[in-house]
Length: 120
Image 1 (cartoon, one colour):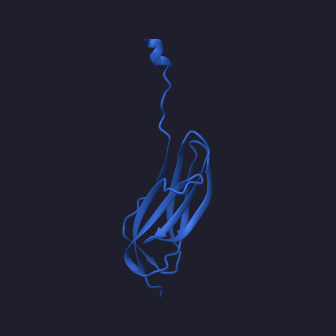
Image 2: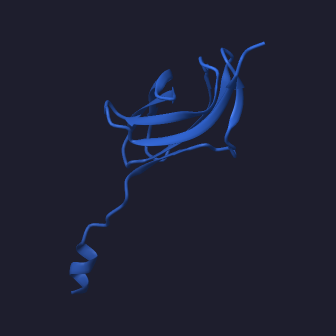
Image 3: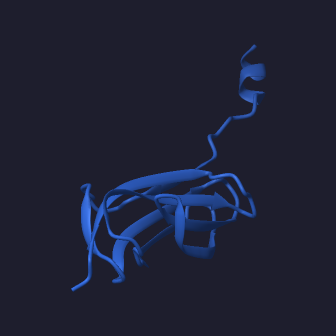
């Protein structure tokens, strides 16, 4: 019986971390037409090299895309990411959508609410 238990394959969870490495509070106030910056992080725990893509949307409208983020297993990516809000308004939902490989389904997502004020 012991030999059988030892011979069973070990199951390891494969996943990707997608996160804000710094504390982020909502809503953020940003100025229309100017760069807003947020730090994003990804850690690959998929047991293989994967390529990721990030889309940033505000109220469903895509404002930025970052492609070809290639990470080996256990490799970490953290970067300042800039995007430009295009419409004035309060409590706008800003989503950070992570796609894996060439997939079209969202793999992970983060959200942040922003108040966009008119440029001066």
